Image: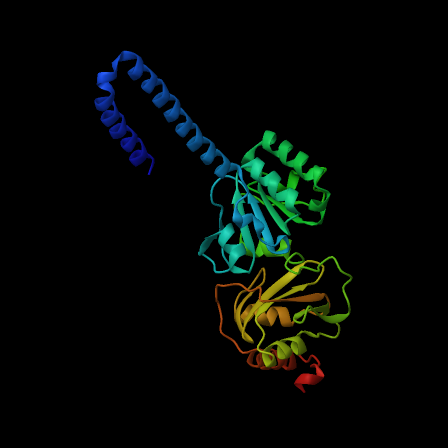
Length: 318
């Protein structure tokens, strides 16, 4: 487009020069000066337009901040997915479980995002270096709402020896190599928009989100409820620390993972946990699949194992 514009100017210059030749040097000099000024103004306008387009907040930044993940870092971060040996980008992982994602390495853009409100999750590349980290610390310190966000740093050489900056006391650290399950452990409370609310014994929130205490091993009843209601979402269980996750698609278990197992055996391991708290996040799910299991079928297998071990079963399965 720009090449065409300059070509058109060149042709116009040749044509006009031909016609003003008879008018002498004064007329031609005036024409050349005006042409030079006009060309300079056009070039300046194009440069300013590109600069403003680059600096202005994009339409993508108008997404709701309660579903927004901001990744600040150089390039694409690749992590291991829920399926061993399969790798995905950190951006795709967040998009797959239902978040909007903004990726940038520009601190000015990062500042503009924070000015609009605190994103629910922030992932920051520790490899940006000390100078960039000081700038991030200053930006976050100026935005009090960021304290309510879940923040993690990745690409840290020795994550266990690092302390979070003063502006982000809740931040955690990940190394250069990590898997999606580790990220899920960090963000499990952030997936729910109302994670800061008091946690009831068992409550239905916003029409579909469910959470409560795993009193008397309530998980079998929860699985039956999700199957009957043909629910889609992500169920996480925490017993002091994250115990595992189960992903549902229209009431069917399509993905499950713990630290030790995946698929069917992961479901068995999660069902065997007594105590802890569970959280079901509607419409947030893992897109990969490592099983295709009806909850009732899983519960029957689990009941048989419990019976063989001489353990009492929940009333709903007797």
